[in-house]
Image (cartoon, rainbow, N blue to C red):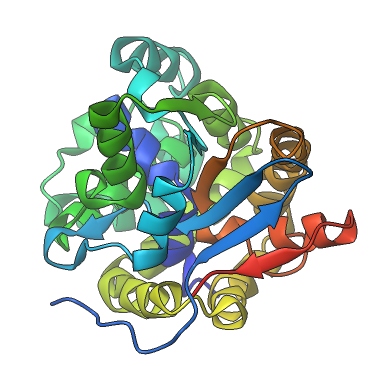
Length: 298
């Protein structure tokens, strides 16, 4: 167990949040894209699957993103990235992401796991004294972010940052489906045992993050929803608590918001992590069940 967790969290957007806290091209070979259109009575909502971190050398977005962006008056993302306040976010992390007074990281994770953390932190250039005060879930996310940075992935090249910067330049309105505190709160709610299990998955995946993520990006670029569901869902089924919190619950929260947009008078482009669109309980399935016709763009 453990393979594919890193690439899954790339899709989920959590690493983009930590970036906000301070912490060779692939040609299109298929006609489909990772963007869908849902038509309301008087407008269209475009729904795009995102990769939150990309390499600068492979950051060109599929052409359907330009079509959806150009055809929309508003951009909606998981987080309204232009309105994330780094100081407030850091304050929230200091309050919610630290271990209780008198409890050490070694006590929380055990000696063997602590030694693995120490080895990986040294490899990634992060002193353990910077990690010791944090809860295991924060530590797991920090290690993931550092690994992605080492592999050349960054948020500025990712889908949301590209679109947010374009919307800012164009004077186009932006909005978020949730707040940073809500997003990270799903991790905070995990029990200590669940946090340690998540940390184990991260530690098992770090060295394969680059190659695994490239496979996800290939499926994403071609709009292969079935392949994405297969690549991204298998490991989460082995960790139901995490899957339910980070994927299923959030999808159920977002779907009514998307339906509300479908009653609007102008078009919207909604961009969320690609994992949220596909598979059982994905947004595409939820919208279809509620009677909406979902059309994949070419």
